[in-house]
Amino acid sequence: MPLTKISAAEIVGFRGMTEQGFGLCLGRPLPECDVKIIPIGDGPLNAFSAKDLLPQGEVGELVAQGPMVAESYFELPQATALSMLLGPDGRPWRRMGDVGWRDAQGHIWFCGRKSQRVTTGSATLHTIPCESIFNNHPLVRRSALVGIGDPGSQRPVVVVEPLSKLRRGAWENLEKELRTLAKA
Image (tube, rainbow, N blue to C red):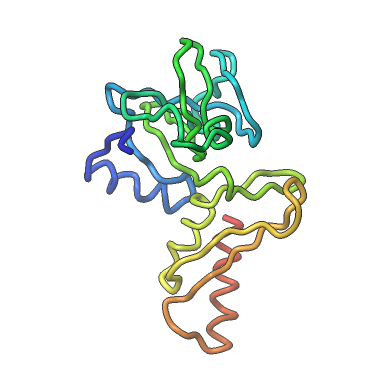
């Protein structure tokens, strides 16, 4: 559903930030929509208040309110209970299942699906920022961040699909280059 708008020029202008791991800029919320960012949670949440809103630049869970945001799932009460909550204004808001952040100009940056985040003992990693760094390499078709183990103590692994079949030596060189990109 459309919640934000962005021009082609903005997309091109933000490409470098996406390639550096900032996420994917979705633009600013439409005038009739409101998007807020709250702490990431996996269980039901009945409401959020103004004190729950995350500051600019901090990654959290996206919640939205507007005329195109459905207030329930058809005949799926458990899914509705997990996705709907009341906002500070008393109106129903939807947990989008996405994570992201807001920049100083009000743009919403998408960092991936909440369910696909990788949580280690010391950090939370999100798919879009991590994968964008690897996908920027000219020999990489696509990559996927996955977590091995239980949430909270996962080991992050990036699976890489090259553009074409690589010889053994070329694969080793690509791996070294990708590790360098990851450290940067």
